[in-house]
Amino acid sequence: MTDFARTKSMFHLPEGVIYLDGNSLGPLPKAATARVARTVQDEWGEMLITGWNKAGWMALPSSTGDRIARLIGAAPGTVVMGDTLSIKVYQALASALEMNPERRVILSDTGNFPSDLYIADGLVRTLGDGYELRTVAPEEVLEAIDATVAVTLITEVDYRTGRRHDMKAITEKAHAAGAIAVWDLAHSAGAVPVDLAGCDVDFAVGCTYKYLNSGPGGPAFIYVAPKHAETARPALSGWLGHEAPFAFDLDYRPGRGIERMRVGTPPILQLAALDASLDIWDLADMADVRAKSIELTQLFIELVEAACPALALASPRDPAIRGSQVSFRHAQGYAIMQALIARGVIGDFRAPDILRFGFTPLYIGEEEVRGAVAILKEIMDGNLWDRPEYKTRARVT
Ligand SMILES: *Cc1c(COP(=O)(O)O)cnc(C)c1O
Image (cartoon, rainbow, N blue to C red):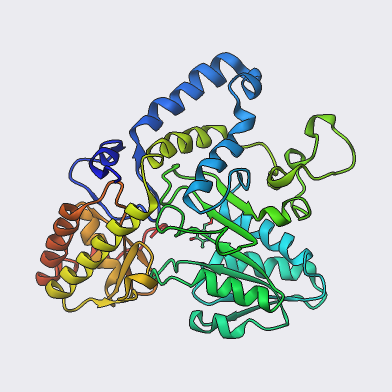
């Protein structure tokens, strides 16, 4: 059984704050402070360039990838870190399209995170030649998979509502129709148990600064199924994905297996922070995390609906088709969220009217859920959100 009191004690959580936004930016693992300082002072500072070998910097993208693999149902040696998620989406998508050269359609859905759709659109424009991004409503994805689809690009958990797609069913249908399945795990990795191998997923990508707590700008990961790893062309053919980067050949030859999905110099300071966070994740069992997450999200929905009737549930009521976040709608959602943040309850707002709350059992428990709802009730009962300073939109919402 995962000891959540212990995992909670391993995070720095500011006094007086109830943090329900770990789905967007995870909090600081206490050990990351010293770990990053050590990497800066002892490694970068003292070892200088020899740190690439002496401190093992070059191995970090694969070793941290292996640690994430455990959380997403992937075998060691199938996940590597690097770049940001938008770039990994491009890489997976372009690689997958090349594996299905007779077809021209990328299928995605309108619930996907815009960056994924923008990247797909940009790739389609670059390729020309009849390539097309087709988006359907989330509920229609399964039905829309037909023999014209080259690649499905689906984000498992909807960033606004937490609605969760059926990874196994969609991947099976994609394969039956001759398509390649690419999954985005941005709101899945560390939030819900994922079984990439069991679902026979072809490519998957995700970020680490959300539930995996690697800090702002932390690197993304990419998974390639073992059956494709030696044949997929990495699409972004950077020198560190080369079979022998330090041979400095003029011709590109992809590296072995997942190593070919590396592009350029890895972000060592961020990887050090991620590695410290994964020490906490090593203490967690995803089945326990999921059970606790369902408990917390159910409790939150029940309490908010009883205390704040003006808020309308925007997430699926059935936890089986919901990730680890809960959203409510209100026309004054932005101002309400600012009033909450001013009182130490941090969630976030997603246009046009969504108040979003993330539940992260490693450091959030029932006490925080009850505390947050009590403050939300005060704000709603007293219209405390109705102040000009809560209505001015900041650059990041
Ligand atoms: C958070 C998120 C991103 C962000 O991409 P970055 O390149 O890391 O900024 C992309 N896609 C999805 C589905 C996300 O949830």
